[in-house]
Amino acid sequence: MLTAKGVDVNREAGMSRRSFLALLGGAAALSACGFQLRGQQDYAFKRLAITGGTPQMVARIERMVQGGSDTVIVKPFEKPEATLNLSEGSAFRTLSLNAQGAIQEYELVFSLNYSLLGADGTMLIPPSVIALNRSMTYSDQYTLAKAQESTLLYNDMRNDAVDQLTRRLATVRSLHPAPGEQTPAVSPRAPLPVPPL
Image (cartoon, rainbow, N blue to C red; front, side, top):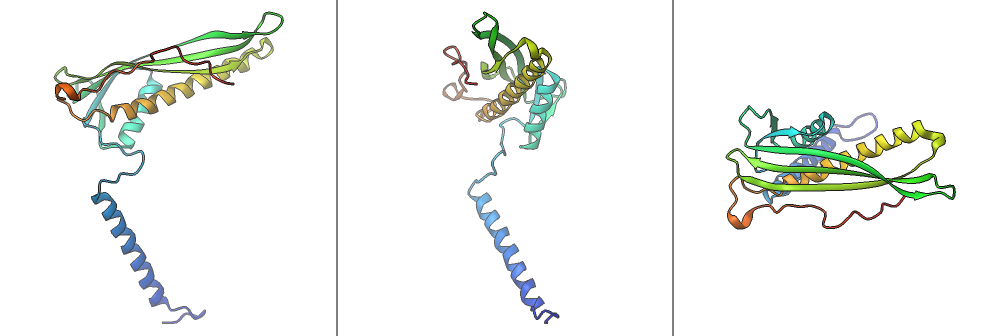
């Protein structure tokens, strides 16, 4: 069948159908060989409870875990298969002074302490630490702006820590690991290097 422009509509429909079937076949072949889209995780636990952490951090973990896997976040009393324990800390220190002795640059530090326990008390991830830092110039003339900038930098570090944490949770392969299969603890072995501006 030809349209006013002389295009064979049946031929175009057949090509679209073949393209769709080829795409569907390719997706099936990729899934059969174990391919997963980036960002998709297959956690060993399907029901995760979170204790500690700020509401902002817990909400981000919930979005990332539930949005990228078939694991759901539940309350601690709803029979979780694993419980993630969180605590965070922040600090800052002077990095440099100007010629008049006033602070010119700060280092902001953020740390996330975490551990993962199975429902039967098995330590799936021993107490571990994610430590991050950022540098920030400072001026007494822009106190309010610098306070807002530090808040943004801390939020950025918190988000970065959550991204690292969700990848770390994916290293747990069993809720009952054998003695040689336990996930090791991770923590910085040396002070963080001074961050560049």
